[in-house]
Length: 116
Image 1 (tube, helix red, strand yellow):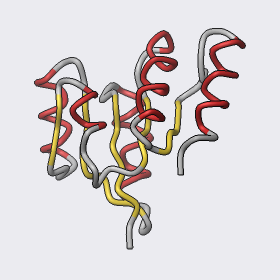
Image 2 (cartoon, rainbow, N blue to C red; image 1 turned 90 degrees about the horizontal axis):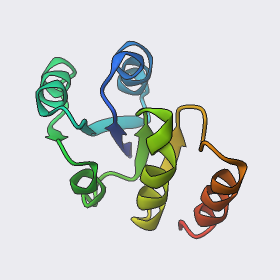
Image 3 (cartoon, rainbow, N blue to C red; image 1 turned 45 degrees about the horizontal axis):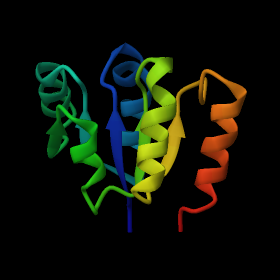
């Protein structure tokens, strides 16, 4: 069985490094992508044959088949998206930095302990 993966943020790093790695991984299936630019999310989904795309990452987090999230957005949004994803019970991978403050990074680590 493959791990259902979602990607939040469809920019250059996402398209050049992370998405190709996820697609090549035999143990993962890229199920959905999200970006605040709907046209970008749609084009990335088409290019990589991803079945679902969203303009609002909250909609992606509601997808029960997505078990793990890659957060590939600007560094200022890492913390709130990570907290939302963890609250939704998702496993989280974050492009560095995890957060913009030590305090927020510790909060993410603490919240991660609650994910089954």
